[in-house]
Structures are given as structure tokens and as C-alpha cells.
Image (cartoon, rainbow, N blue to C red):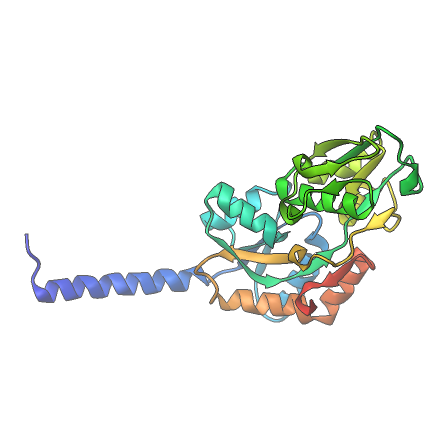
Length: 269
């Protein structure tokens, strides 16, 4: 059955109106921000500061590194803060997500830690080393082991290195892969472990500033990002919240308290 031109225009106009309303609804209500324990305390400060400025923000804390992206993709939350761009790229590819980096947050140092040894040259022949089990953060651990002179990686592997890319391992180290958030617990069992100072601080089993080696800031790709679903870049709530996070002196003081000297503002990189 053919619709009259007038009816088609009416239907089209109605659809446009509904789309406009839906778009407006996307940016109404509280801004829902997902994160993990490693980033929550400074975000809590930003949420409180946002409230003072008339912006309603809800913080949702996750215990793993998969659910925050699923929740943004599904529209359950508006933005998450826990990952850097290499991790996001891998998540999009493996999960079929449509997520994009919106704005930089911070870059954290990671280190090599040990509860059994006080220097890298004490790591024994055949010693055990724990790195993150996800392909992106595991690569960061391998790059740090290479920086320490303990292994050599195949040229060009870089941010996508895997244990298969190790071409020289003179101490015959046994590389075991552990969920990143559990690396701090592995310190009781291994000679050396890749460690995230914020998780070590939460675990309270070693001084996070006492790494045998830190990775420094030679890889700006590891700046943690505010991540959103593509198409939501114009959300005014988001722009205001990120501005508070990046520029509020109160939030900066909270970042300094929580991370100490083991971070840098990513927006100044």
C-alpha cells in the first residue's frame, strides 16, 4: 500500500522528533561512570566536586576488566575509566565493541617487584616471573623484563609482544601469566612479578615505591583513557566531568595522595 506524500512527511517528521528525543534522553539524568578499584578514590573526589557544580554523577565500580566495556557498549553506563588505548583496541577487536577514547586521564608507572630478592641480579637461574595474562598488559610486562636486561624480545614485537617473542632468556626464567589484578598476590610464590602500584597499595603486601625497576613514561600509549561508545562525543555532562577531573585542584590533590609519585597527568603528555 502506498502512503500519500503528506502522510509520509508526517511519519518522517514523527520519526525525526522521536530520534531527537532519544538523543536528548541519552544526555539526561546522572552521568554513569564505570571504573575499578585502582582508579576509584580520585574519581570519588571528582564525583563530589561535580555535585558541588550541579552535575549529578554515579560511580559504578567493577571487579574485572571485561564488564566495564560491555556496560558502555550496552548503554548501561556512559563512560569508563580503567584502560589505555592498546587495551581498548584489543577489546574492540575481540569483543566487537564500538568504543573510542574520549579524553586522557593519567599514566601509571608499573614495576618489577620481589619479596624474595632485593636486586635484579639476584634473580636465580630458572627463577619464576609473573606477568599479566592479557595480551596487552602482558606485553608491557615483557617490555619491562627486556628493559631490566633479563630477556630479549624479537625486534618489532613491541606493544604486542608475547612470551613466544622471547629470543633470548639467559637465565632460563619461567614466565607465568596471571590475571593482572591478582599479580600482587603472586609475589608470595614467584621470584619476580610485574606489578601495578595501585593494586599493591590496596593489597598492602609490599611497598609500591620499592620496585626493583619502573617502566617510566617511555610508552605514552599507556595513558589511561576515558572511554565512551562512538557517537556520544557531544555529551555535555561528559565534557564537564572530564574538565573537573583534569583541572580541579581538589581532584589533583586526591590523585597525589592515592598514587604518590607513581603517576603523571596524561593530558600533559
